[in-house]
Length: 119
Image (cartoon, rainbow, N blue to C red; front, side, top):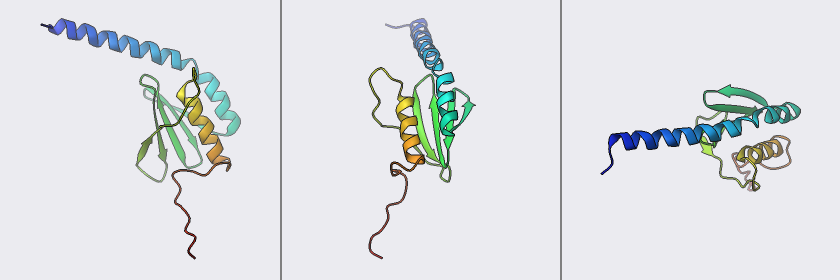
């Protein structure tokens, strides 16, 4: 039977693993800041991660869990990013590529209301 010390040791091991992954992701932040500066995306550090703002879109990226949520600034609802990323590349690159395409007008937003054709 497991003892409380076994659970504490397992929890500490999981935390150490999350911290190591966050440290690996943190090394991408300076590069991401350069890309964001080039495309006019505002980058802010938030507790546990980074926040990217472009026009009316807000992207939150938590480094320890690699969780990415997308939010429209006029709404309190957040949507988990479910896009496709390239192999051996952090998910945040796929998100920023999509954000740049949407805000530059090359691709329609998935959050915008559909236009009616019955006028």
